[in-house]
Amino acid sequence: MKIGIIGGRGHWGTVLQSLPQVPGAVIAGISEATDQLRSLTGNPPEFSDYREMLERIRPDIVCVDGWFHQHAEMCLEAIKRDIAVYCEKPIALTLPELAAIRQALQEHPVPLISITPLRYEPAFATARQLVAEGAIGKVKLVRSQKSYKLGQRADFYRRRETYGGTIPWVGSHGIDLLMLFGADKFLSVTAMHDCSDNFGLGEMEITAQCIFRCAGGILASTSLDFLRPAAAPTHGDDRVRVAGTSGVIEVIAGEITLINAEGEQKITPQPVNGAIFSDFALGKSRISTEETLTLTEACLLARESADSGQTKYFPAAQE
Image (cartoon, rainbow, N blue to C red; front, side, top):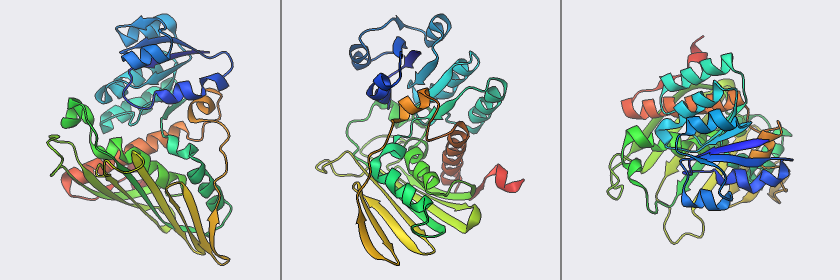
């Protein structure tokens, strides 16, 4: 199996982490490479133009991790060549781009997912299994959190046209957690974001909040920020709270707390079989192409809501 990699600005490392679990898989070519990408992949054939790599190598899977504002273009170039796409999120920065990807997939139905590795974190995976087994009854409320250290950010984060916004970038993870726990049929979203006090980073939003109304009477929300202190023990602080008709489950700092009729319990996270890239390559991904399209739509409509100050409604909810 031939793997191509474009760029090195996000989660491309997940390819290398589980590559040995895919029989016969090799990095056959790279493009827009960083020094780290070259060294860790053993300096495979490198192409200045990613299209030339796609055309000459014809990889079975391409990892798209280039400039954010070029993700959709790169996905489309791969799709039209019938190449499976493993893409850094978000896969598109505008709704017309997303519509073009949907259309291309109808004509060339290849697998495509965005890289949302939180689904493979033991605590989230274990909590999700408990919810699926009915540990808290019918899900009614889901709340997630994604908090990052700001650190040093490249210049492209300063401009919406190249960064795309904190809701699509960070919100992809937070909204994916909502979907993981059952809030996956979106009806409407009301969101807000703010770029004041962002340490001189131009148009980059430092905080954001998104509230979704979902089918089945589920309310869901995610909070996003780049305000995690530099002295914190981890780069990110990822959390989720799911409330159901007969209990509540929370994941904080990799620990699970379940409260239901049996009282409060600390649940030990169970090891996760597989990994996000190897599962995708082997045809058993925990996120589907359709879920990726839904996730991207949710991010973009939430950003539109935050920009306009108006609630946005999902097309499927109005049919």
